[in-house]
Image (tube, rainbow, N blue to C red):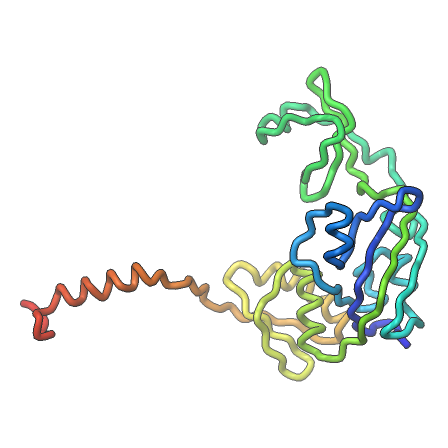
Length: 239
């Protein structure tokens, strides 16, 4: 039985109630069916009860069994939230033009790090909806719990993918995780250190490593020829 704080691997498909429109999935066949351009699809690994999924979905996982499939209906307030009228704002159209964007009704784009939708644009002003596109909608998830994850490295990889949006190499020393990062990434890792400890019970440190650039074989070969040219045919260095 799945318990809070367990790490599990799941496959799921999320649909909007009333339309059956698929908005998210880990399954290639479902993504293809819905014409979703989702790359690198694979099962999702998460910590139960850590809000790595919409609240209603997360709550439904406790008490379920590994290897079985389920369906959960999630109301808007426990999915992507209710629509907030105050998050619909009027913005000068010139701000979009400065970014070489011509705002059109229905257009969705990333603005200030979040997905927004253009409601209208005229008279030099553009009405923008900052609500999540799924705000106010009830949703359904069909999901399968593939397995309970026990491997600590798999847990760490799952957490750093979720929190950092990328994977760093790391070393484990008892209850300490040391991430090998390039200079400049240390503050970013420290920002999520507390959350990492809350979920996994392990402290986080960083070790700055030098960035390695792949060697271009053509450049490498050219350098060898240059060295040969500096020497005589017998290999002795020229004066």
